[in-house]
Image (cartoon, helix red, strand yellow):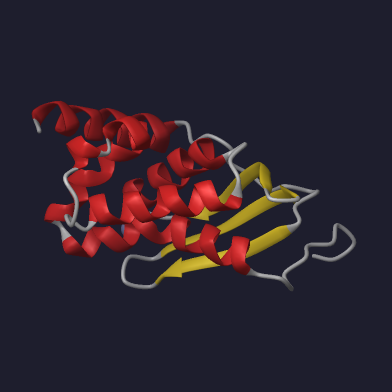
Length: 152
Ligand code: ZN
């Protein structure tokens, strides 16, 4: 587990300092806001879907280091994946951060996402780590939230 702990520190620091895919997306086909009032994390997740493929993901907003790093790693992990693949990844990620599954069994599938298994010891932080994923999930499910560059 100590390797995961090191990875946790490294991933949180790195992705918090320089979040990947951070900022708005002009040609998003889905846009959903996610809010975690317990911590004050507040993000907007943008998705550009082409058929079933997540062609691009971006996010913007503010929150704690864990929520921001998680959103950053999530965006990098699901880009280019199908909706079903992204949902599957979310399920594994959720199991690992809630301590239901052994992170070592999911390391290969989750990559850097496995680092977040460290939050399973801190139930309050689980919501920080999963916020971006829940937001992505609604974005993928939503059939009405079509973003127009003419609005907003
Ligand atoms: Zn938070």
